[in-house]
Image 1 (cartoon, rainbow, N blue to C red):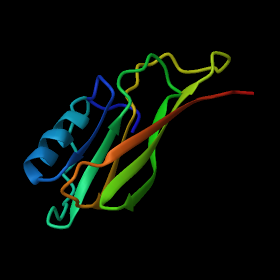
Image 2 (image 1 turned 180 degrees about the vertical axis):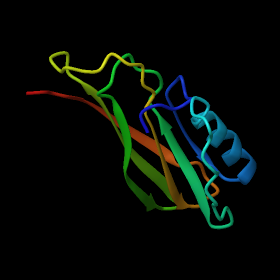
Image 3 (image 1 turned 45 degrees about the vertical axis):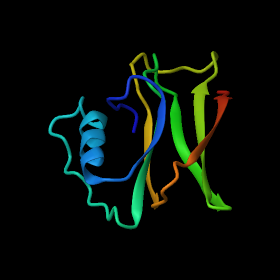
Length: 121
């Protein structure tokens, strides 16, 4: 998603419907009408969110790339990209975000964010 309601970068897990509703409303605060809240079985699943925050142009992205579990700890890999200064980008404010469902765990996942600059031809 290129435009979300998250103005600052954030990574977090959601474990209940109330928190999911609040996050969904914030994610879509710049959209009308707000899409219906997707059903999530919070007995066995949780939602993870990665937000990049406000960026000055197009060309930015954030995406989940992997999730692993070892010794009871979950690690979620996130890739954040930005355009090189040589890239032609749309002059539009964006706030990229990614959402995923993962198996529910009691411990907070560790988010491992890698950043890279994408070069353009």
